[in-house]
Image 1 (tube, rainbow, N blue to C red):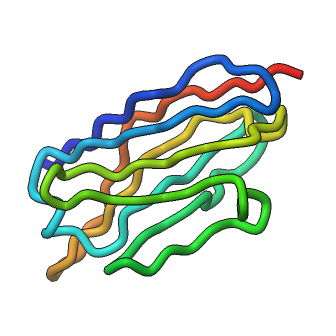
Image 2: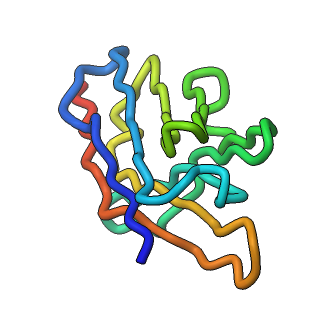
Length: 117
């Protein structure tokens, strides 16, 4: 069973920065997509950013403020979050999809990010 373990969440003032990390329990080279989703109270889980073979994809709401990267040798995906806003407050979940059939989806347990105004 693959485990994804997030870290780096916390409480920050608006305009501040946080860096999330997610370490997988197996080689990063065995995953296709890796990324981050978030879920705010009363809202559906939404995509924040993904990275696949160097190609990145961002939600419009975070473009220019967040940056995703991955280090396959360290089995890790990162999310650098700058210029944080109160509306970024959510539980952030790490996500990974297997590269090879059957391409299972894997999720971390989530890490809370709270941005105060």
